[in-house]
Structure formats: structure tokens, C-alpha cells
Image 1: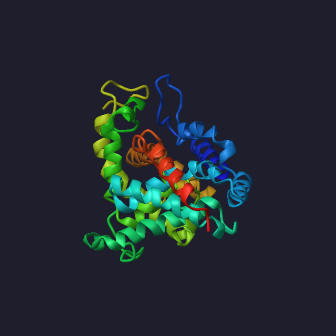
Image 2 (image 1 turned 120 degrees about the vertical axis):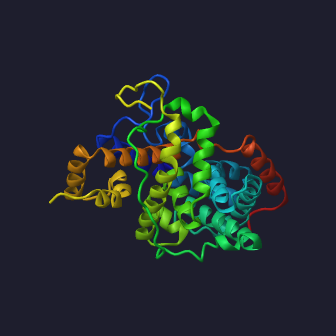
Image 3 (image 1 turned 90 degrees about the vertical axis):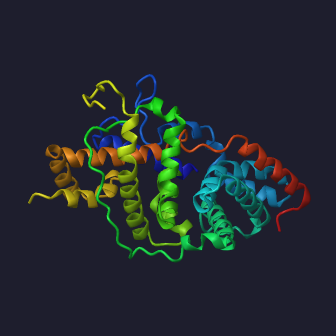
Length: 254
Length: 82
């Protein structure tokens, strides 16, 4: 998304302006701020991720150039998949649901009115697909998205620790780290999982997240705060194991 | 007035997103200067946020894209958008 990318950069810049301590470094020691690498990797898709391109694409697909649908959906396939994974928590099922979503987007393309961002519309379809499958899975009824509200209170006291401050980039190559994060997110209540997915993993802004989930912007912020607090509490003590064993550049040992 | 740790924790997410007002931000910053615990909580929360945004942590399954587009190809042959 052109817009998404702009927001992403703005967010990253804001974090750096905050006077943040250097968070992640790649092998050459270059700062890799929030989403920095993702942004760079996606910069190549600039032409394929803006409203003008989408509108033109849709017009031509509807006029018979079906093959263009591949290019229209490509920038969104990642978000579609992780939406399904966050709902269904099963990779095989999530992939199938992602494929079904793409097909439904194609078949219903004529119904896109352009009164929302295309991505918002696509992710709403993805969400409905995932929710429909969840409803069919009787064994997962206890995780009903409708049953949970923002009223619930919880203990959001953070994990107190002083020695884990930075995660070396090499740790990202370790499968365990990704596994820890994914497991922690899977363990979140569903209403938090979805917000984390859209805001922190796909880096959408508050407004679009609210639109996809059909909730108020205030609820997005509250849920995001609680989700991050729960993740910090769950992850911070365990991620300590990924801190460098020698004294780091900033004087923090493991 | 000096704010306490609990108060800082309540605003950590908004602080990370740059969504606290100037006054509160200044209060939090002052607190962070002297509070090792809150600094660590902020850093670890921020690190979690940074990690989640990293594509290397959340990778698509191998071959996902090609399987998706193969299936789309079949669908595109069958039908047009309604």
C-alpha cells in the first residue's frame, strides 16, 4: 500500500525521534528500526500498491484482462494469510482459507465500490472467510470472537527485568525466536490477536485496523495496549536467552 | 507532580506509537531518566513491537505464493468476476 508504506515510515521515524535506544542491528551494525527491512523489501512494489494502480487494475480485469488479478492481489497475500493464521491458528487451514479469500475477492470484484481502501475491503473478506470457518469448528467455540469484550479486566503488570534490552539481529535467523513470538501471539485472546496482527505485524494505521475489524478506533488502541503488555510479560523473560552473552555495546550483559 | 510506574505502564503503548501529548510525554521521559525498571519495560515492549514487524519473524510458508497463484490461474480460467 502506498499509504501503508507512508504510515510505516512515519512510525519508524517517530520511534527514532523518540530518542530510542538502538533496538535491532543487522550484521553491519546498521540500525534496523521498526519495520525498516520490510519497508525496504516492499519498496519494489511501489507501482503495484497504490489506489490509482488498483482502480486501473480492477477496471481492466472487469473489462476482461483477468490475468491482471495476480498483480492486484499479490501485495495483499501476506496480510490475507496472517489474518487467517491469527484466526484459525493452523497453517494448512490458513493457507486454504487464504486461497479461498483470493478467489472470493476475484469473484466479487465488481462489488468493490471504492468507498474504502481496497486492502480494507479485501481484509474484511478475509476476516469473514476465517470467521465462517471458525464457526464451523465446534471444538473452538470457547474462543468465540463475540464472547470476549473490552470490559474484561486482567493483570497487565509488565515483566520486570533489567538485563534484556536488545535482541541481536542474528537471533532473528534462529527459528526459535520466530516460534516464541508466534506462540505468544497465538496464546493471546482472539480480540487482541487480530489487533496485533493488523497494527504491529502488518503495520496498518489505527483507522484502517478499526475499519477491517468493525470496531472503534479507541477500542483498537485499548486492545493493542493490552496485547503488547501481555506479549511483553510473556516474551521478555524468555527472550533474555537471545541476548548476547558478552557485554553489549551499551554495557548490558546477559 | 511525579508520576508513578503504574501510570507509565498504562501509557507505554501510546508512548511507543507517539500518541501521548507533549505534557505527558515529558513526564514519562522524566520518569524514565531515573527509573531503571520502567526503562527496561519500555525497551522490552518496544523490542517486541519491532520484532513483530520483521518479515523474518513472520514468514509466509515456503511455496505459499506459487500455490496461491496456481490455484488462482485455475479459477481465472473457469470464471470471470460476477
